Amino acid sequence: MKSKKIVLPFVCMFMMVLLSACGGKGEKTGDVPFAEVEKTETENMDKADVSVTENPKEDTGAEKGESGKILIAYFSRVGNTDFADDVDAVTSASLLVKDNRLYGNTQYVATLVQKAAGGDLFLIETKEKYPSDYDETDKQGEKENREKARPELASRVENLDEYSTVFLGFPNWYYDMPMAVYSFLEEHDLSGKTIIPFVTSGGSGFSDAISAMKELEPDADVVEDGFETTHSKVDEVTFDEVKAWVNGLGIEKK
Image (tube, rainbow, N blue to C red):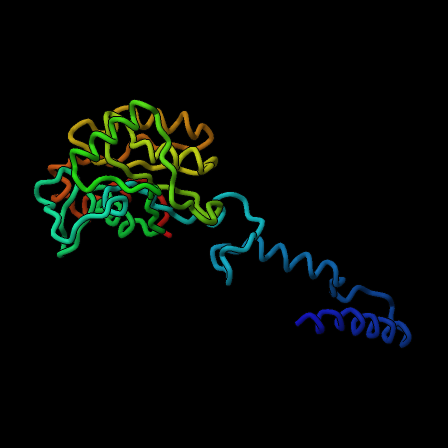
């Protein structure tokens, strides 16, 4: 392809010289100089959907969130705990089983959000696993909250600039977000993006989580009408319920 582009200007110059030699009147033929052709092609590419690339990891020079992709980031015990195969989900306040699969409460809601809105799921995962015993996890969560700890995360979101909308889900731990979610927000600049929260709780809802998000991400648009459900009711949350909430947000499914 490159060799053809190099030959093109010489062919055009030869034709122009030939026309001039034949007594042409010097009228414009409508041809565009090679440099302007390159510029026009580049401009057209810039206007295209940058989400359609052969290598999404390659820097396209797009502004943050230009592709409009959706990210569903969530924190959940499942994925952050090594549970035994015979774990009793019925007696735990943060686990449930659907279609013979073990879910964390927040994880389950996150999968419904993805089904309704599209996008990519991302588990906020800590390097250090939490105890499988609920009471022990509760104690660790309380200690982290009291000390304002920032657990080290096992991974970060790649190509964050591709996302314009971030659903952020978590359980309410001690009237707050888990400290791992603070780690996530402090390690990821969500400026210019829309943050849409959802929470599972024992009954406290978001508490002060939304105001905390606004402080941590002052240049993001934090939606206050987030999705809430309690641990005792999460098993009854339906796809239609989540879909109605997502549709009411007015975002475009990607």
